[in-house]
Length: 231
Ligand SMILES: Nc1ncnc2c1ncn2[C@@H]1O[C@H](COP(=O)(O)OP(=O)(O)OP(=O)(O)O)[C@@H](O)[C@H]1O
Image 1 (cartoon, rainbow, N blue to C red):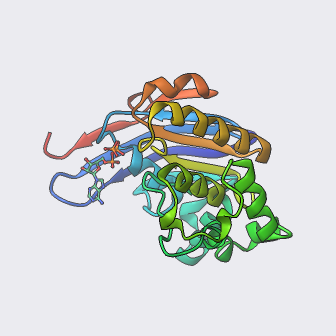
Image 2: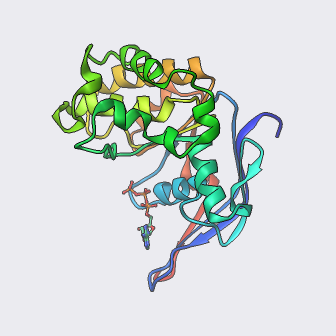
C-alpha cells in the first residue's frame, strides 16, 4: 500500500507457556495521517499486537513494516533506535519518570532517537510549545512529574510521544484513568496535535463510545484470529 505508515502481513505470534495465547493477523495497514481505533475485549490481544508493532515482542512469522521498513529484519540495537525514531508511545499508566522533571520526561525519547532529535532544532523550545499546545500550566516544565495531576501527567505523556514528529503514535488505553468529560478534551488535544504533526494514530481501547472521533474503527476479532492452547 502506498503511503502506509504501518503495514502488517501474515503475522503470527504465540506467547510461550502452557496456556499459550496465540494471535494471527493476515493483513492490516494504517495510512499516513490516519487515526485508527482498535477495539477489543479485555484479554483479546490488543496489547500483544501493540508490542509486536513496537518491536518489543518479535513475531514467529510474518512482517511488520513501519514507514516502509520491516522492523523484524533489524538487529536488537537497530530496532531500538528505529522504534525511538519512528514511534511515539502513550502507555495506559503513562510511564513517566516520577522524580524527573516534565522537561526531562518530554525530552527522554530524543536521547535514543538520532533522526527524531535532528527534526527538532531547539528541543527545549519545542517541549515548551507542546506543553502550551496541550494546555499545561505555564512553568510546569520544571515541576517533578509526580507532583502533577493525572490529567496533566497524561498530557506530558502525549508531549513526550509527539516530540520530534514520529510518523506513528501508539496509544494503549490512554483515557482509562480519566472521567468522560476530561476524556473528550484529552482526545481533542491528541487529535489536533497528531494532525498538525501529520502523524498516524493507532489507539487501543475497549470503549466503543470513542469510535466517532476516529477515521476508522477496527474490531480485533475482524482483523485477527486468537487462540489459547487450553481452549
Ligand atoms: N507477558 C506475557 N506472557 C505470557 N502471556 C501473555 C503475556 N502478556 C499477555 N499474555 C497473554 O496474552 C493474552 C492477551 O493479553 P493482552 O494484554 O494482549 O490483551 P488485551 O486485549 O490488551 O487486554 P486488556 O484490555 O485487559 O489490557 C493474555 O490473556 C495472556 O494469555
